[in-house]
Length: 290
Image (cartoon, rainbow, N blue to C red; front, side, top):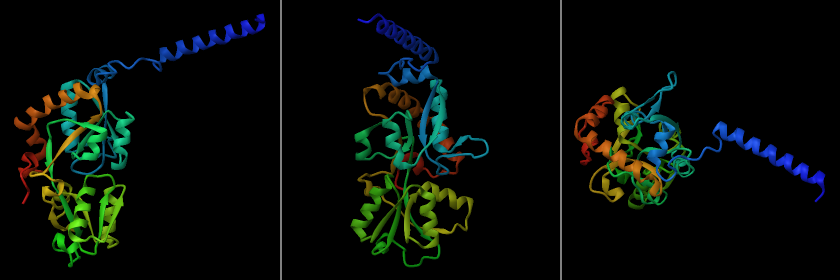
């Protein structure tokens, strides 16, 4: 082989080796600790990226302080404190939740209902850390919608990729909703209800309850709470944490359940819900909200 070519290759390989050493020193090629064990991985890393969204009182980021507040935030921070892992909230839309989890942009997602589609791509913990009911709402001035049956021929709003799509489809099948309009987040949906661009919307009941407590003259009106049979259940929808699908999540899921189980029984869970005005016992027990 030509000596010049040999020297060129040696210089190239030597340079490449030095680059690899530098990148390794910077941590770029640092192997994932406990790659088959998420709990070990996160403890070694020191923080956990948690997918969340902005819907008071469940979850929101304070613009001035950057702090994460809400029911989901307080439960998650308590879990993180016990595990010795810092919490890094990541704000997402509902449509981005599954992709963010499967790509490991986030390690955990907080506050999801269980659905068959979601269970195909993510794993859930076993202990629901609170329960919730969804509501059908319309604008206060709307007089033609008093019951679910009055949605025949009407336009209904729902957040895309939320579990409420199941209820929207059920409402359409049972009572002849004319059109289901899907939104990327709740705010533009609610604005369209208020402006009369859609007739009604499905929203989170606890958010509606919270909004009415903050403003008794709220400009949206409750039509009714969805019964749990819309989800094929006997009790209200439990909210859970979800994790990347696979056996590597098992240790982390177990750790969450070992923390959340006692919290739901020893008063800590009740105190968190009370902190945000969710004092109705149904939020803690899952019994049907009347």
